[in-house]
Amino acid sequence: VHCDQCHGLNKKPYIEYELSADGVQIHKRAIKCAAWPLMGQMLFLSPCIHLKDKVRFYMPRNSKPVIIGFFYGTTKPLCANQYLKCVFKEMKLAKKRGIADMFLKFYVGDGPSRQFIKAFPSEHAYCGCER
Image 1 (cartoon, rainbow, N blue to C red):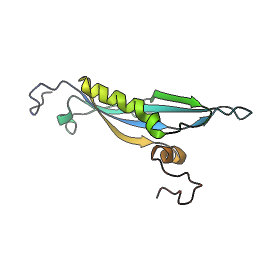
Image 2: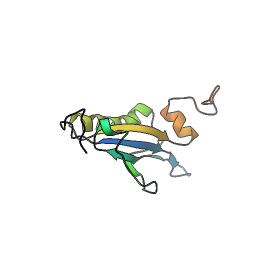
Image 3: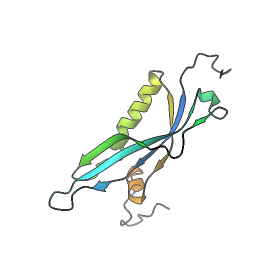
Image 4: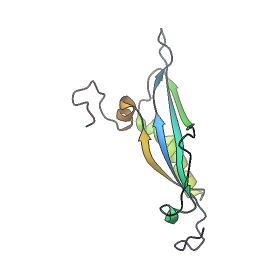
């Protein structure tokens, strides 16, 4: 497939993906530990950013997400920026090195994880509802 807009100079594929995260409490006894895996799943791949609406290679919906980040500690991560920093750093690096143009389509998570990522007060706080 040839792109007329980049005249064959852009060899970077365009990738759209989704992120998901959920915290899991590991121990319920004396020392509480929490694990927060950050998972990603590719939605589709296109040969060029200009062809993203015309030529798409969709990934099967039954494909499994992969772990792209992991946090383990006695509490959940203190800051969502620090938790997601490695992912966005890798995205920028892939674009800078000419590997791929990547776009985060959406974030999937339950209520508490969405509120953590958005830096929104917890559901038990005053005005803690997202809506």
